[in-house]
Amino acid sequence: MYNLLKGKKGIIFGALDENSIAWKTAERVHEEGGTFVLTNAPIAMRMGQINQLAEKTGSEIIPADATSLDDLQQLVEKSVEILGGKLDFVLHSIGMSINVRKGKHYTDQNYDFTTKGWDVSAVSFHKVLQTLHKNDAMNEWGSIVALTYMAAQRTFPDYNDMADNKAYLESIARSFGYFYGKDKNVRVNTISQSPTPTTAGQGVKGFDGFIAYADMMSPLGNATAAECADYTLTLFSDLTRKVTMQNLYHDGGFSNTGVSNEVMEKFIK
Ligand SMILES: NC(=O)c1ccc[n+]([C@@H]2O[C@H](COP(=O)([O-])OP(=O)(O)OC[C@H]3O[C@@H](n4cnc5c(N)ncnc54)[C@H](O)[C@@H]3O)[C@@H](O)[C@H]2O)c1
Image: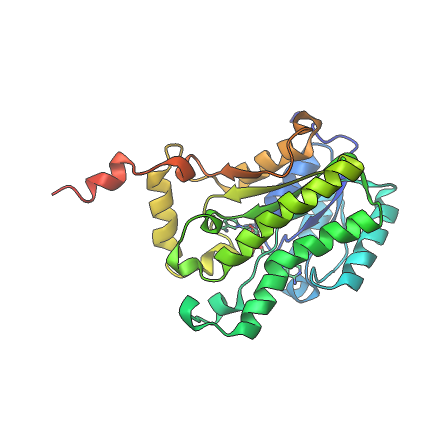
């Protein structure tokens, strides 16, 4: 442990169960001396085991639907009160597509599902940022991170409308990052993570093939949820103060690999 986050306070969205990237991040932030409020959608609270995580990390839980401005306002106000001051870090680790869940093909979307998924997976990030900004809830040089996937840049057929949601999410990080940087010296970035076996990840059709292929293509292999947590900590720390408005690949080199020998061998006759 490096005490990287000693004295820092924040909010962590999206810890559903122990596989969640947000769960691993909460554990690591705690180890590094950070304190935080845990939050998730009220409906997910019953399913998840978030109470265990709260106990383990000495955190309070405040339920909030990340698409509800009222919930977010309450969450931010209460978090600042509980933690005893403004925030230094926020993790947005939220994603959901009803089209994916219901098996609707990309060429046959139900647009009510599309709109809901876009609100949860992308616009919620703007809502979180706007609520923090309006409440002046972040300390100078604070850091806000959202998680994304490379389907925002390249097509993966079964990622469906989540690809569009992630493209929108990454754009919000750049656009809001500009204003938050100018106004308050607050950083806003997205981390583009390898396929990871979590509830959200495994919802994608053909996930097993998907994750094995990415692993074979990546010179360093897929990045795990625990490794993603480590990377996020560096962005929350004071060691990355001038990194903002970036989409940062955390994928073992996958995004810059054309083909690997291991994948080629499967095609050589
Ligand atoms: N698993 C992967 O392969 C992978 C790869 C790249 C990026 N990501 C991204 O990482 C993030 C975390 O996902 P994960 O893989 O840890 O899966 P996960 O299922 O553990 O986490 C997704 C979370 O989103 C929460 N959520 C859904 N609707 C919400 C709402 N209305 N308000 C608040 N929270 C809500 C869920 O309750 C859950 O905790 C997501 O943005 C996901 O797209 C995942």
